[in-house]
Image 1 (spheres, rainbow, N blue to C red):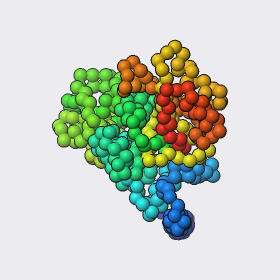
Image 2: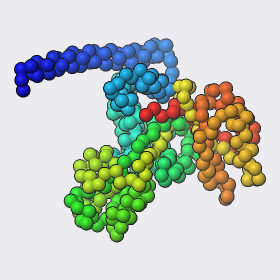
Image 3: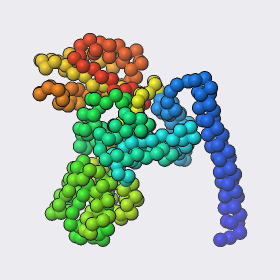
Image 4: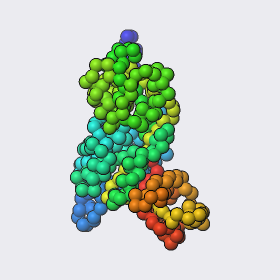
Length: 363
C-alpha cells in the first residue's frame, strides 16, 4: 500500500480509537446512573421491580426516532438492549425461564428481549417454565403463544388460564429454519428430527426434497439438534442458535415454507407494565352457551371505540362444549377507553381475567 493510503487509514483509525474511548466513558457513566436509580429507590424505601418494560420500550422507541444512520434501527435496538441488560445486571441479574434445552428459538427470543447479561434457565416443559416464575426461582418467563404459519401454541394458552403470572411484554421473532446435520449430502440423511411445529413449518420443503425420509417429532428443536449431533445419518430442523451451540453444519438454510414465518412470544412475570404510549392488553373471557353470546361480549369494545387485534377460542376445562375466548385489544387498561370497555365487559361476561397490559414489541 502507498504511504498516502496508509496515512489516510491511520487518521481514520485514530479517530475510531478516540470514539471508542469516548464510548467507554459514556457507557460506564450510564451504568453509574443505573446504579444511582437503585440507590435512590433503596434510600426512599421504594418497592418495585428493577425491570420496567414500559420504560425500556420508551427508550428504544426514542432511540429509533433519533437514529440518523447509517446503522439501521434493528442494529441500534440490539445495541441498546445489550447496554440496558448489562446495566440492569449491576443491580440484580435476572433469571429467565424458557423451554429448553439451550439452543431453542425460545432462548433466542429471551436474549433478543432481555439481552445477554441475564441468567438463562432452560426448562423441560412449558409447565415447568411457568412454575419457575410462580415459585420465584426465575424472574421472568418467555413462552411462544402463536406462529404466523401454524397458529396458537395450545399449551401456553391453557396455562394462561390458571396462572397468577401476568404478561408484561412481547417478542416478535423472525423464524429461519435450517437443516442441520453432519451428513455431507442429502442422500445420506436417514431421519429428520424436530419439534412438531417446525416440521409443519417445513412440510412442503420436506415433501419436495426428502419425501421418503422419516420425520420424528421431539420436545424441542434443540433436542433435535442434540440427536443429530449424536446419530450418524440424522438431521435436525432448527435455528441458528442450535447450529452454533451443537456445532452442526447447515446443509440447507431458510427451508421454512413461508418466507415471513414469525413467532410471537409472551414475557410473563409477577407484574405487568405501566403505560408506555403504545400498548396492548390481553384478556380471557367467557359467556353462557347461548345464541349471540359472543356478539354480546364484543359490544363493549365497540361502544368504547377500542380496537380488537386478536380473538381465539379454546375449550374450557370445566365443562364439555364450553369455550373461553382469548382477546388482544389496543391500549393499556389504565387508558380511559380500555377501562370503560373492561368495566362493561365484567357486567356482561360469566368470567373475565385480564392477563396484562404491556408495550407493543419494539423490533
